[in-house]
Image (cartoon, rainbow, N blue to C red; front, side, top):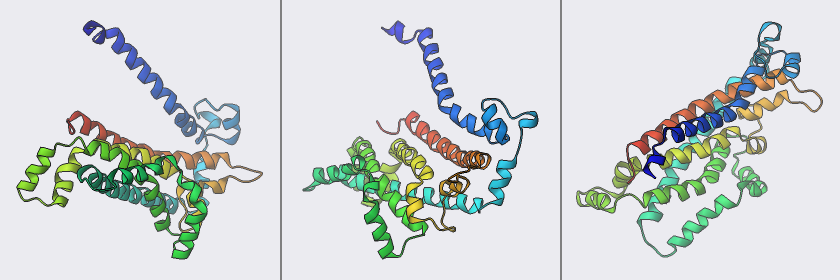
Length: 279
């Protein structure tokens, strides 16, 4: 059995499968990026070839920069995504710490209630959410999107983080209490650093759905000053005519920040796991 585990052939096969999966996952991104630098005719006639010669064109990026306020859309998406992730991680970690650390009547029921949010999609309550935002005067504000995305991500955050926090040593926390640390200090200085892998996981799971979402920006923040990047890109998609050069260019620009954020959180996740944060 030990020889089979350390067999170089098995290791090479695993690497080959990993490379294959990576190629399959990145292939759509490659197609979008390549075709964003092509003419409309080249997009449809030679979609898998590189943009060389007469096929090369920057008309899509020029259209994106001229039509609409692309940089404002990009800024709105960044603000909504970063703020939502911050509140999801903060409130999710605090709720998970309370559920895993303190024993009180209704502890299990509270955990099950929060877990229901994973199974019941928040879009079911779109009408009620819209009425609530109208009554609160938050329509066409980024605050409305941040509140909705925070509520959407909290159930999964609490479910994942609570499982990790139960693995944190009680001796470590009790030692902190003996040394006079408050519960807030124990939470922020002792527990949070030890659950970095799970926090990175929660961030990765919530980041892409928030960045790519079209439903709630279209309903709650469709104003010109509050449009997100995904909603702003829809201006190039018409009922009868679609500017594919501009659409692919906008999608290419929208993909880059996601890749950067994903790389940052992935590195944090790998660093936390390899450092043996949670025993």
